[in-house]
Length: 487
Image 1 (cartoon, rainbow, N blue to C red):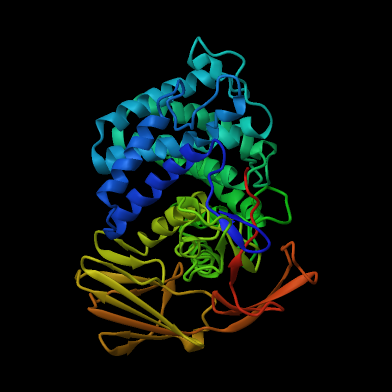
Image 2 (tube, helix red, strand yellow):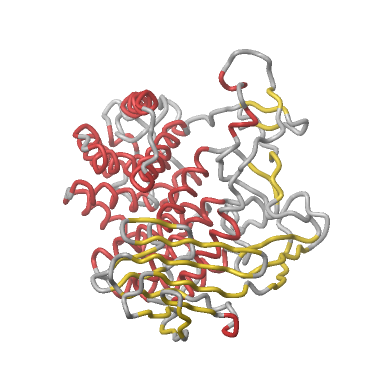
């Protein structure tokens, strides 16, 4: 949404990016529906399907908005990942034969265009096209086909198409040697775009897990501890561009949380789960807009782009948000952050053969298990209702003072003994309650907002949640962030 300094606004579409947002929309909404039962209105889904097939009707097979054979910038190949995620989920959740066929076409065409993985040539997709070689940032490997590995694996999971897996492997071999340094430092091939770099790392991680490549998993874990952890501040702020000091990116914060969870599956390092929950509580949830923003339309007319603007912010997860304040209303960022939140929410509890494992202290419910999380001032209260008849492994935050831990099993206090970050309650409890203190602490970070009035800000925490920032006050300080019109 375009927002001017006087708080007049207008909904807008970024040139060439509508196809990108269609992929984002499917990826977020189909996952949300599968996770929560959220109903997509039939008329909305029908309209989005129309848009989907219209925008995939081009020589690449991916979602593009009216690509111009004479303008290489209109071939927004950055959307390869979003196309494959959307088509994979349409196969998985809608049994769409057309999506299956379209995905196979897109992979074949994009493989032709990326014969040379260092230089795209879209002309290879159609003999009528000439001189379509994206250069600069728009053609960077990580920004285009690196991030697509994840989408290819989503499509492969739904279809078991071996040619798609082979293409993911081809891309992964290239990117592992270009964006992963064995010492964990940031490699030269990382590109400029934080979100694309992290998408590429996540794709490499998912494929290494699928292929049981322990050496690659170890290298990615080292990269997380070094390069990736160095990108994000303790409060969860990540820049949109690698190496920049300003310009936040909520999508990348969600990516890091999800990567931490996936790495925990491999290493069982409980601090990875703490990282993930910390990002959710300190950045993703505070960035959610819960009330209308004080805006007026730029024009007084009946056009949709000027209607209901204050309310359109509600539910958005701020995109290029500031360090301690501001909000933007962007489909792209909201959909990406929502995807990460869903991934973590679905892993709040793992039900295993002989036990259940509570990984996150989120409100959660599924057949046989419910988790109720409450936080009041300086104390956290977690209840686990267990109808599975299985023992329970309950993650205990390392920062919770041991003297404050109070654990009961079916109403009776029991001792807290932990192993690898979890307390084990092995006698098939029906109800578990855990109480622990939320210790207050203060951290200081360089202030990364354009409107900063001093060099640093102080974050005041209770446990893993921020409740105040000095000198700003409320956290997160939500206001419509200025965003230039695209035209």
